Amino acid sequence: MPDFFAPPRSLGLPSAIGAILRNPKSAIRNLENASLTPLPGHLYVVATPIGNLADLTDRARAILAGVDLVACEDTRTTGALLTRLGIHKPLTPYHEHNETDAAVVLADQIAAGKSIAVVSDAGTPALSDPGFRIVRACRRRGLPVVPVPGPSALTAVLSASGLPSNGFLYVGFLPPKSAARITFFEKHRNFDYTIALFESCHRIEKAVDEIVSTLGDARVICVAKEVTKLHEAFFVGPAGEVQARLLKASLKGEFVLLIAPADFVL
Image 1: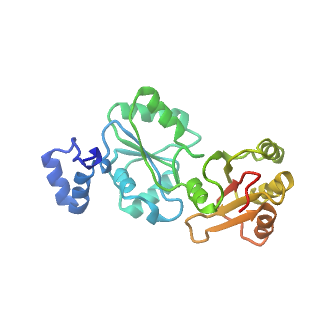
Image 2: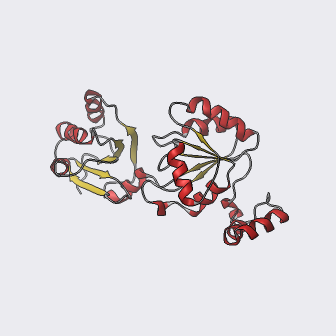
Image 3: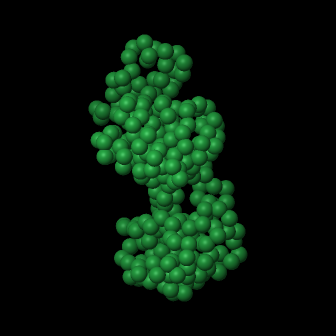
């Protein structure tokens, strides 16, 4: 039988009885699946919903409820999420402005035996969101890092786009300057795989215009916005057609942009 079905070794009989009395269903489930119980001295990289609360996994919920501390991009956003889940845990800010120093402090706490979960505001940490530095700090020290997979705008859009997914290049956010973006498109004009990136609502229309002018209006692209949310929308097809459709669409929200290889036909 796989190890993750074994009862957690760190849970003694008195603690187990107390946990069962407090929350019988949850405690019994955790006894049956040790991966639902965070271990001391471990970092958990926890994916959270990108718009639909129902996408949070049982394992993510259990880990967030069980760790000693949650390191989060915005304590208000994560605090609101945990409140909706009925979870009350100490939160510490971990974001792009403090993550270099915070990573060292958090790694020290993990080395001292604390269990810590790192989350971003939405999706999977470390993918164009804070997370990389604390993971690297733990790896450098040989501290255990455990992924708790779940929602990701990148993989969600790639899987539902219809564009080739046998390989892809993820580049995060492109530079804000138009000249730098055009240089990137020209450099990767003949790239063999799908190119995936994030773009803001303020620049998505301009980015598609630059694709049309640089790669041509026949280049197949996918523009997806507000994935898993109420106003989710996919615009897939030749870049010229997507460009025209975006002129009639609301451009609020967050966007994922995919660019198919040059020879791809939808």
